[in-house]
Length: 186
Image 1 (tube, rainbow, N blue to C red):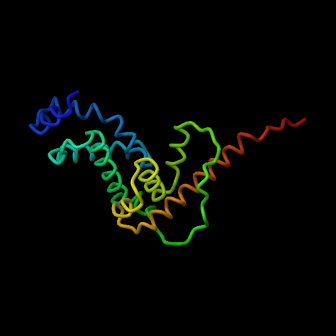
Image 2 (tube, rainbow, N blue to C red):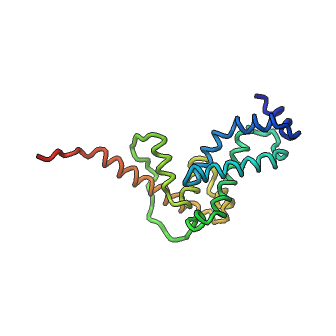
Image 3 (tube, rainbow, N blue to C red):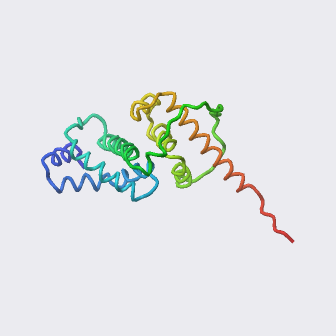
């Protein structure tokens, strides 16, 4: 697929090009949206809203970097806005400034399937989930996350640390359960 031609055809309003762009990126971007929401229905809503923004703002794409990376940024911002404006999520988006116990930077020795880990991340409180995804998955710095969410960099760091600590404890508990021998009573 020639991305430059595809983008230019989309900008001309050609439906076939728009369909091709959507079909090329929808599945991957649905996964991005799902990382920030608690249900596939919400993720599909974010995806649709995100593609409306993609097509509305496609003239802003400057062919610097991959088209998919630009679309991903649009989807992430759309997902964050969805979380902020949706009552179901907005009450869970709290970024309080209370102090935390130190979190170890050591990674627990675990073997876990990607689906299992994604499921655990999805179980995090919405604020932790969003910041964890932005930093650990999308690669944003805490400064960037703070600017995106309108919070202090330190708050982004502490929310990330809390989410990470919660995930580590869940994983350690899950591993402990797996390692426990089952006792067959007499």
